[in-house]
Image (tube, rainbow, N blue to C red):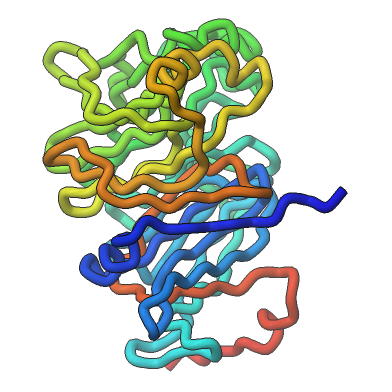
Length: 347
């Protein structure tokens, strides 16, 4: 039996939106081990570019979009754009992301990754239930852990997964539960999810279902209540989660750009981890099937204004980020010989 093919289709105005916003998008699928770059060809049609990186997950980019960080199975990678402004690579790419620096962390199940105000890297070390930084000589350097985690242990106790930065420093983190035992979070998937303030460790929101991807924009804390299929805001004064829109799929990966939110969607796996969640009931009530792809939501109205639908071999996404100023991005990977032949000289 042939393996299902990859099919990617966009809503009618998705390409126009990319052109108007002058950006491209990057997203990861750890299930298929792919980094995808979505942009526009010179004729205005959708450009879809992918490279293989085993279990790639967290993504973040600098404000100018010329540097890209990604977490993978046992390494963190920093990609740099090798093209000077105004130049293009064969195929018409106006950005060519080259993996220039890699940190070997071991398989710590790294999730979200972010850059601090000093240009340093912070990532969520899910296996050890902490925030960490890459180390020049070791697997990682612990930075912070929730107060209810009694010690560093390779036990994925609370499934710490999401990280939000504010003013160049870690500000909030999401976890599936407050458990302090080996994989204790699995018993609290339905409504044990929390948002923690960093560094105080204060829990600012409770009662969520497998929350992911906290992001701060203009003083507002956005969070994906993944197990319920919701994008929402946390009222920090009351601790209340206020839904903005429904997401017809398991939502993970959130990028904010101007008045828009770009959300990654996954179909629900037929496994104990992803079964029995409020999302199942919400989809049934709305007569909807779970989707895989991207949603573009207008935060002013809560309306889904554009979408990218993915079918076939890819069923789960983890993260998405915006690449400002990029029209048609490409990247080098390790599976072809291009990386041997691409040489640039620092001037």
